[in-house]
Length: 151
Image (cartoon, rainbow, N blue to C red):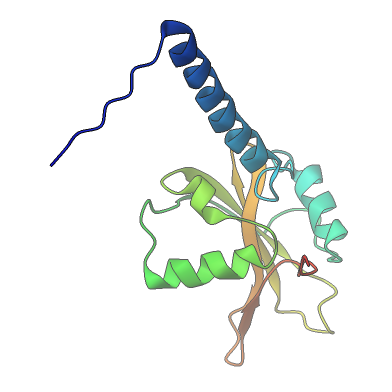
């Protein structure tokens, strides 16, 4: 097997390193600006405002608050949940392995039902996922919002 070696001058090596760091930085900036990170949620008012922007009217205080650990490696159940969140513009992979807060709000305007709850996941002060669901026998789980398909 033949090895190919490339010899770079110091200037070219530093230029290559600078371009590489810039590319990595841009990837992180784009991830930060993605739907998973653009919605502040550290305060109750921010979470309620976000839910209203999705079209949901909720009780003014969460009915439940939990600290949860997003797994580093997703089981099939979590992969399905991540896919549901992608429909709303969230990418749970961005918070894999992190601790998040889960806030549960009672939804007041879901098709006349009184058993629907909005679950919001907040990591590092930003809304990073969630769902609308009900635990009823004929229950369901849907995205918080459906984003238009990008063409």
